[in-house]
Amino acid sequence: MNESIIHSGLDGTDLRLLDLLQQDAALSNQALAERAHISPATCLRRVKRLVESGIIERRVALLSPAKVGAGLSAIVEITLDRQGAEHLQAFEQAVVGDAAVQQCWRVSPGPDFVLVVQTPDMPAYNALVQRLFTQQANVRNVKSFFSLQRVKFDPRLALPTRG
Image (tube, rainbow, N blue to C red; front, side, top):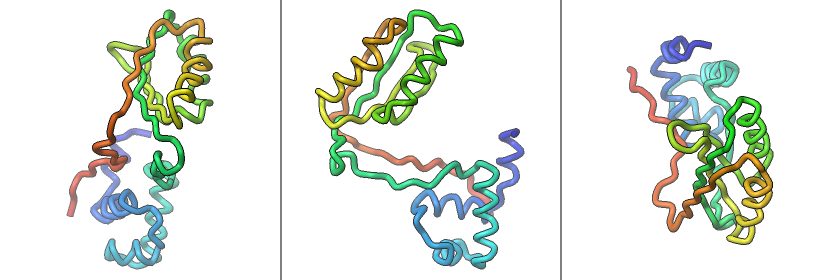
């Protein structure tokens, strides 16, 4: 679906709903409708349309990594030896299937992939390195950056303003 068609179909009410849901997806339909200044029926219909169109991909709870035992955050750059489509897909399948990998981005230029990983500690990170990178014959280089402090984490997207 054309992104500009999706974007141009959003009016001010849709944008308000999206902004409110990005702040707190656990709001009841009644509370969401009140904050968006629309009726509950309209709210329900619009949110359903936003979900069905794929604009809202899913609703999740954001957890505190340290409080659930996943206190080591790392950003990992991966360079492969061979970048053929089958090699890229094989690597993607391996990392997508691993619960410690929160995000996987195919990037250019520079490394082939950038991963965001979350593990309990350094031994768990080393185990991740072994299973995903060392055992993969096609991985040429791994460069890891470890978080010392999370200064900002906000998954919300900046939305255009409309009346």
